[in-house]
Length: 270
Image 1: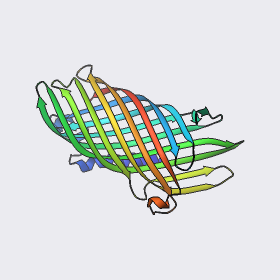
Image 2: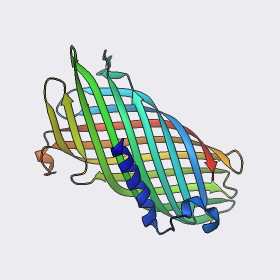
Image 3: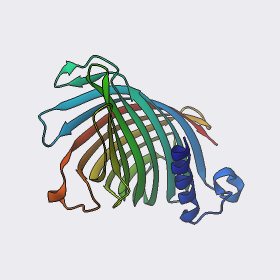
Image 4: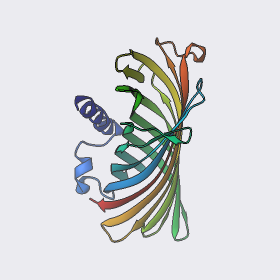
Protein backbone atom coordinates (compact mmCIF):
# COMPACT_ATOMS: atom_id res chain seq x y z
CA UNK A 1 0.00 0.00 0.00
CA UNK A 2 2.85 2.40 0.80
CA UNK A 3 4.35 1.80 -2.63
CA UNK A 4 1.05 2.59 -4.36
CA UNK A 5 0.59 5.80 -2.37
CA UNK A 6 4.14 6.81 -3.22
CA UNK A 7 3.47 6.37 -6.93
CA UNK A 8 0.25 8.35 -6.69
CA UNK A 9 2.09 11.15 -4.88
CA UNK A 10 4.70 11.30 -7.66
CA UNK A 11 2.04 11.75 -10.32
CA UNK A 12 0.24 14.42 -8.33
CA UNK A 13 3.51 16.31 -7.97
CA UNK A 14 3.92 16.34 -11.74
CA UNK A 15 0.88 18.56 -12.08
CA UNK A 16 2.61 21.28 -10.10
CA UNK A 17 5.38 21.47 -12.72
CA UNK A 18 2.96 22.29 -15.53
CA UNK A 19 2.91 26.03 -14.85
CA UNK A 20 -0.40 26.30 -13.01
CA UNK A 21 -1.11 27.49 -9.46
CA UNK A 22 -1.84 24.73 -6.97
CA UNK A 23 -5.49 25.68 -6.66
CA UNK A 24 -6.07 25.43 -10.41
CA UNK A 25 -7.42 21.89 -10.35
CA UNK A 26 -10.13 22.75 -7.86
CA UNK A 27 -11.31 26.26 -8.68
CA UNK A 28 -12.84 27.08 -12.06
CA UNK A 29 -12.91 30.80 -11.27
CA UNK A 30 -9.10 30.91 -11.10
CA UNK A 31 -8.86 29.49 -14.62
CA UNK A 32 -11.48 31.17 -16.73
CA UNK A 33 -12.40 29.01 -19.68
CA UNK A 34 -10.97 25.80 -18.25
CA UNK A 35 -12.68 22.43 -18.45
CA UNK A 36 -12.30 19.80 -15.74
CA UNK A 37 -13.96 16.43 -15.57
CA UNK A 38 -13.82 13.22 -13.58
CA UNK A 39 -14.72 9.87 -15.15
CA UNK A 40 -15.40 6.41 -13.73
CA UNK A 41 -14.77 3.69 -16.31
CA UNK A 42 -14.91 -0.06 -16.81
CA UNK A 43 -13.19 -1.92 -19.61
CA UNK A 44 -12.71 -5.39 -20.97
CA UNK A 45 -8.99 -6.09 -21.41
CA UNK A 46 -7.17 -8.99 -23.04
CA UNK A 47 -3.52 -9.75 -22.26
CA UNK A 48 -1.06 -11.73 -24.36
CA UNK A 49 2.43 -12.55 -23.09
CA UNK A 50 5.07 -14.11 -25.37
CA UNK A 51 8.62 -15.16 -24.53
CA UNK A 52 11.75 -14.87 -26.68
CA UNK A 53 13.41 -18.12 -25.65
CA UNK A 54 10.32 -20.24 -24.94
CA UNK A 55 7.61 -21.37 -27.41
CA UNK A 56 4.92 -20.42 -24.88
CA UNK A 57 2.07 -17.92 -25.09
CA UNK A 58 0.15 -16.85 -21.99
CA UNK A 59 -3.30 -15.32 -22.45
CA UNK A 60 -5.72 -13.81 -19.98
CA UNK A 61 -8.74 -11.50 -19.93
CA UNK A 62 -10.06 -9.26 -17.20
CA UNK A 63 -12.53 -6.51 -16.38
CA UNK A 64 -10.69 -3.39 -15.22
CA UNK A 65 -11.88 -0.34 -13.30
CA UNK A 66 -10.39 3.10 -13.85
CA UNK A 67 -10.66 6.65 -12.51
CA UNK A 68 -9.61 9.46 -14.85
CA UNK A 69 -9.20 13.16 -14.06
CA UNK A 70 -8.69 15.63 -16.92
CA UNK A 71 -7.89 19.33 -16.87
CA UNK A 72 -8.11 21.41 -20.04
CA UNK A 73 -7.03 25.03 -20.12
CA UNK A 74 -6.90 26.63 -23.54
CA UNK A 75 -4.53 24.52 -25.61
CA UNK A 76 -3.12 22.65 -22.62
CA UNK A 77 -4.51 19.31 -21.47
CA UNK A 78 -3.57 17.23 -18.43
CA UNK A 79 -4.81 13.74 -17.68
CA UNK A 80 -4.34 11.51 -14.61
CA UNK A 81 -5.43 7.88 -14.73
CA UNK A 82 -5.49 5.00 -12.24
CA UNK A 83 -6.47 1.51 -13.51
CA UNK A 84 -6.87 -1.78 -11.66
CA UNK A 85 -7.76 -5.22 -12.95
CA UNK A 86 -7.36 -8.90 -12.15
CA UNK A 87 -7.80 -11.90 -14.41
CA UNK A 88 -8.30 -15.30 -12.73
CA UNK A 89 -8.17 -17.34 -15.90
CA UNK A 90 -4.90 -18.09 -17.73
CA UNK A 91 -4.52 -20.03 -20.98
CA UNK A 92 -1.19 -21.46 -22.13
CA UNK A 93 -0.89 -22.25 -25.85
CA UNK A 94 -4.66 -22.46 -26.11
CA UNK A 95 -5.17 -24.73 -23.08
CA UNK A 96 -6.49 -23.56 -19.71
CA UNK A 97 -4.35 -23.99 -16.62
CA UNK A 98 -6.02 -25.40 -13.50
CA UNK A 99 -5.27 -24.08 -10.03
CA UNK A 100 -4.95 -20.66 -8.45
CA UNK A 101 -3.54 -18.73 -11.42
CA UNK A 102 -4.04 -15.03 -12.09
CA UNK A 103 -2.75 -11.79 -13.60
CA UNK A 104 -3.06 -8.59 -11.58
CA UNK A 105 -2.68 -5.14 -13.15
CA UNK A 106 -1.97 -1.73 -11.58
CA UNK A 107 -1.52 1.17 -14.02
CA UNK A 108 -0.91 4.83 -13.13
CA UNK A 109 -0.29 7.39 -15.86
CA UNK A 110 0.00 11.12 -16.45
CA UNK A 111 -0.29 12.81 -19.87
CA UNK A 112 0.37 16.41 -20.84
CA UNK A 113 -0.31 17.62 -24.40
CA UNK A 114 -0.18 21.08 -25.99
CA UNK A 115 -2.64 21.42 -28.88
CA UNK A 116 -2.63 23.71 -31.89
CA UNK A 117 -6.24 24.38 -32.86
CA UNK A 118 -7.65 24.99 -36.35
CA UNK A 119 -11.28 25.82 -37.07
CA UNK A 120 -13.12 24.07 -39.88
CA UNK A 121 -16.64 25.41 -40.27
CA UNK A 122 -18.75 24.32 -37.32
CA UNK A 123 -16.09 21.85 -36.19
CA UNK A 124 -12.65 22.28 -34.70
CA UNK A 125 -9.62 20.16 -35.52
CA UNK A 126 -6.70 20.16 -33.08
CA UNK A 127 -3.37 18.37 -33.15
CA UNK A 128 -0.81 18.38 -30.39
CA UNK A 129 2.46 17.13 -28.95
CA UNK A 130 3.34 16.33 -25.36
CA UNK A 131 4.72 13.69 -23.05
CA UNK A 132 3.48 10.79 -20.96
CA UNK A 133 4.71 9.18 -17.72
CA UNK A 134 3.62 5.69 -16.71
CA UNK A 135 4.03 3.26 -13.83
CA UNK A 136 2.64 -0.19 -14.60
CA UNK A 137 2.81 -3.22 -12.33
CA UNK A 138 1.90 -6.65 -13.70
CA UNK A 139 1.76 -9.62 -11.35
CA UNK A 140 1.52 -13.20 -12.53
CA UNK A 141 0.95 -16.20 -10.27
CA UNK A 142 0.80 -19.77 -11.56
CA UNK A 143 0.98 -23.25 -10.10
CA UNK A 144 4.20 -24.94 -11.26
CA UNK A 145 3.77 -28.23 -9.37
CA UNK A 146 1.61 -29.80 -6.66
CA UNK A 147 1.48 -27.32 -3.79
CA UNK A 148 4.09 -25.00 -5.39
CA UNK A 149 3.43 -21.62 -6.98
CA UNK A 150 5.51 -19.20 -8.99
CA UNK A 151 4.92 -15.45 -8.55
CA UNK A 152 6.33 -13.06 -11.12
CA UNK A 153 6.10 -9.25 -10.76
CA UNK A 154 7.17 -6.79 -13.47
CA UNK A 155 7.40 -3.11 -12.53
CA UNK A 156 7.50 -0.81 -15.56
CA UNK A 157 8.50 2.87 -15.19
CA UNK A 158 8.78 4.95 -18.35
CA UNK A 159 8.40 8.27 -20.12
CA UNK A 160 8.03 9.30 -23.74
CA UNK A 161 6.40 11.57 -26.36
CA UNK A 162 2.70 11.71 -27.22
CA UNK A 163 1.01 12.81 -30.45
CA UNK A 164 -2.72 13.58 -30.43
CA UNK A 165 -5.48 14.65 -32.82
CA UNK A 166 -8.93 15.78 -31.61
CA UNK A 167 -11.95 16.76 -33.69
CA UNK A 168 -14.91 18.27 -31.86
CA UNK A 169 -18.15 20.06 -32.69
CA UNK A 170 -18.50 23.77 -31.99
CA UNK A 171 -20.81 22.99 -29.04
CA UNK A 172 -18.29 20.38 -27.74
CA UNK A 173 -21.13 17.88 -27.50
CA UNK A 174 -19.32 15.30 -29.61
CA UNK A 175 -15.59 14.79 -29.99
CA UNK A 176 -13.32 12.10 -31.41
CA UNK A 177 -9.61 11.70 -30.82
CA UNK A 178 -6.55 9.66 -31.74
CA UNK A 179 -3.57 9.44 -29.37
CA UNK A 180 -0.27 7.73 -30.12
CA UNK A 181 2.61 7.47 -27.64
CA UNK A 182 6.05 5.85 -27.61
CA UNK A 183 7.42 5.21 -24.11
CA UNK A 184 10.78 3.85 -23.02
CA UNK A 185 11.85 2.54 -19.63
CA UNK A 186 13.83 4.76 -17.30
CA UNK A 187 17.31 3.24 -16.72
CA UNK A 188 17.40 1.30 -13.46
CA UNK A 189 13.78 2.14 -12.52
CA UNK A 190 12.03 -0.95 -13.95
CA UNK A 191 12.45 -4.30 -12.22
CA UNK A 192 11.38 -7.91 -12.56
CA UNK A 193 10.97 -10.07 -9.45
CA UNK A 194 10.46 -13.83 -9.43
CA UNK A 195 9.47 -15.80 -6.31
CA UNK A 196 9.11 -19.57 -6.56
CA UNK A 197 7.97 -21.45 -3.46
CA UNK A 198 10.62 -23.94 -2.40
CA UNK A 199 12.73 -23.29 -5.51
CA UNK A 200 14.41 -19.90 -5.92
CA UNK A 201 13.93 -16.13 -5.93
CA UNK A 202 15.47 -13.65 -8.31
CA UNK A 203 15.44 -9.89 -9.01
CA UNK A 204 16.58 -8.34 -12.30
CA UNK A 205 16.36 -5.10 -14.27
CA UNK A 206 14.02 -4.43 -17.20
CA UNK A 207 14.65 -2.42 -20.33
CA UNK A 208 11.59 -1.91 -22.49
CA UNK A 209 9.84 0.05 -25.24
CA UNK A 210 6.09 0.55 -25.63
CA UNK A 211 3.85 1.73 -28.45
CA UNK A 212 0.32 2.80 -27.47
CA UNK A 213 -2.54 3.77 -29.77
CA UNK A 214 -5.93 5.01 -28.50
CA UNK A 215 -9.16 5.89 -30.29
CA UNK A 216 -11.60 7.88 -28.17
CA UNK A 217 -15.19 9.07 -28.64
CA UNK A 218 -16.95 11.39 -26.18
CA UNK A 219 -20.65 12.27 -26.30
CA UNK A 220 -22.17 14.88 -24.01
CA UNK A 221 -25.50 13.90 -22.45
CA UNK A 222 -25.95 17.28 -20.78
CA UNK A 223 -23.89 20.29 -19.74
CA UNK A 224 -22.34 18.32 -16.88
CA UNK A 225 -22.43 14.63 -17.91
CA UNK A 226 -21.10 12.63 -20.82
CA UNK A 227 -20.21 9.14 -22.04
CA UNK A 228 -16.70 8.10 -23.06
CA UNK A 229 -15.86 5.18 -25.32
CA UNK A 230 -12.24 4.16 -25.91
CA UNK A 231 -10.33 1.49 -27.79
CA UNK A 232 -6.68 0.99 -26.78
CA UNK A 233 -3.84 -1.18 -28.03
CA UNK A 234 -0.51 -1.34 -26.18
CA UNK A 235 2.54 -3.33 -27.25
CA UNK A 236 5.57 -3.81 -24.99
CA UNK A 237 8.94 -5.21 -26.05
CA UNK A 238 11.17 -5.93 -23.05
CA UNK A 239 14.37 -7.63 -21.94
CA UNK A 240 15.73 -8.69 -18.55
CA UNK A 241 19.33 -8.34 -17.35
CA UNK A 242 21.00 -9.01 -14.00
CA UNK A 243 22.94 -5.75 -13.70
CA UNK A 244 22.34 -2.18 -14.78
CA UNK A 245 23.87 -2.97 -18.17
CA UNK A 246 21.03 -2.49 -20.65
CA UNK A 247 22.77 -3.66 -23.82
CA UNK A 248 20.48 -6.09 -25.62
CA UNK A 249 23.07 -8.85 -25.91
CA UNK A 250 23.37 -8.90 -22.08
CA UNK A 251 19.70 -9.81 -21.65
CA UNK A 252 19.09 -13.33 -20.39
CA UNK A 253 15.36 -13.34 -21.20
CA UNK A 254 12.65 -11.14 -22.65
CA UNK A 255 9.48 -11.09 -24.67
CA UNK A 256 6.44 -9.05 -25.65
CA UNK A 257 3.23 -7.95 -23.95
CA UNK A 258 0.09 -7.06 -25.87
CA UNK A 259 -2.89 -5.30 -24.27
CA UNK A 260 -6.19 -4.70 -26.06
CA UNK A 261 -9.01 -2.99 -24.19
CA UNK A 262 -12.48 -1.62 -24.83
CA UNK A 263 -13.56 0.99 -22.28
CA UNK A 264 -16.86 2.64 -21.40
CA UNK A 265 -17.04 5.46 -18.89
CA UNK A 266 -19.37 8.04 -17.38
CA UNK A 267 -17.89 11.54 -17.16
CA UNK A 268 -18.88 14.37 -14.87
CA UNK A 269 -17.78 17.96 -15.51
CA UNK A 270 -16.53 19.64 -12.36
